[in-house]
Image 1 (cartoon, helix red, strand yellow):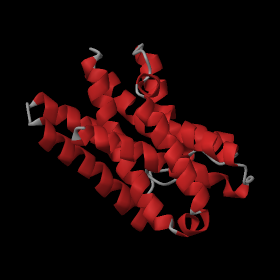
Image 2: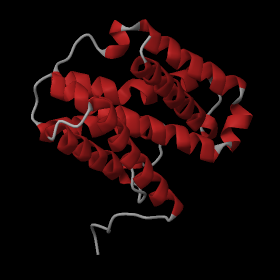
Image 3: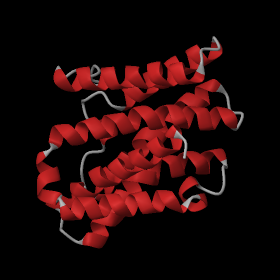
Length: 201
């Protein structure tokens, strides 16, 4: 098992946990929590692959991703009270997830021959669309439309990756720098309550 593959499974696991505990204000049905975790974990990647025509979908071609999601749902169910109090910890896991999956999404798109501009958008979709679908299902304002900087951080990291890729920077170094930028932007935005200017003045 490669490090990248292990991190993909781990990221899927944490996304599933964050999705499962969101329903605490809705109901406590285990199936509902598992479904919400499932959508959160694979929604973005599934949408990306469908738009790019890449089949089979990742979670269909590799059952280990489904097992990771189920494991995340079980952990969320067993340790719900403890996890619900760990808002900051879950923020860290979520941010690590979006930073890593943004870059993986960009790489996946590039490998399928799309233009760099489209690859950046696909990277952003990979990271955030699962959360958007989750919020819609749970009647929350989608994270995409909240004031906090979220999707913008992913897009900036994706663009940086493409710039460094253009200059033939080593893949691992590029991955570290680009995902690190997403982490920094996200954490700084949350800490100092930074947001983009309002569209309506």
